[in-house]
Image 1 (tube, one colour):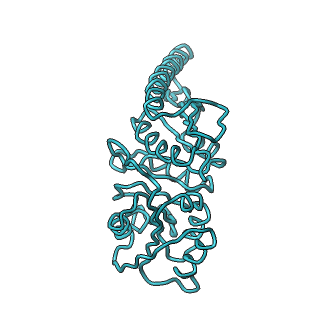
Image 2 (spheres, rainbow, N blue to C red):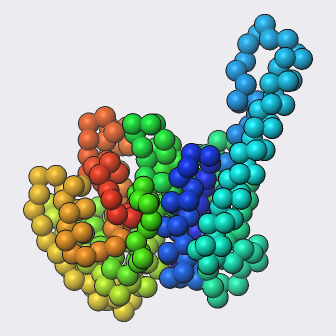
Image 3 (cartoon, rainbow, N blue to C red):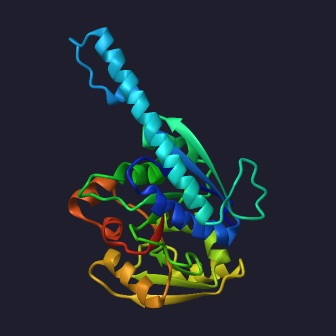
Length: 284
């Protein structure tokens, strides 16, 4: 079961969407959401110039700090209102018997805050990256590569689906990344009413078979069905197959080759990141 969900936010307008997605899972698992606001360091907001007078620099730093204070106050108020609308009780001492939320603030880069807070989270919820606006990619990377925890990627929908995790689709190819995903998402799978394993492509040499995964889940009381498919682009096919199966959440291993290579040349994970219109949990 999920008990601690991290939602890192900043003033990019995506906090409401991510919190809404996390709330659906929090209600399903009676989980506690930690909303971590990334507060920019004022010194990093002021460009360095050797010829800048001390007074001028101090004035700019003060203005930057005031801007951060205003942004944080507005963000907190909006998220407080959203949390109330989502029926999340605000507390710093959750008992695990109902969905709850707390708000914290850390100064620094988003990726550092994700790394710090994410390593003891059961799930890290982030917005789907917007490559056109160059937003969110580093946050997703920090969650995947620097925490050892699964990451929920939330698409930019006006409202999340009523259910997330009732019908889980598990992408399986026997790889190391897929195996880590299975281990890190047992709570999601065990809480689901329906589990569908998506299996396609050429089996890996010495890779664990899909039938062995079915048996692994069966030991935990999970009855999983297998949906086989063939596709030239497995990444895009995973989304199509998950949707056709009626799943509301896709679980998959991420970036079996480097993130940089997939970003430049394309790959299965990058295809999912770019095209997903459903909630996706990834693990590396």
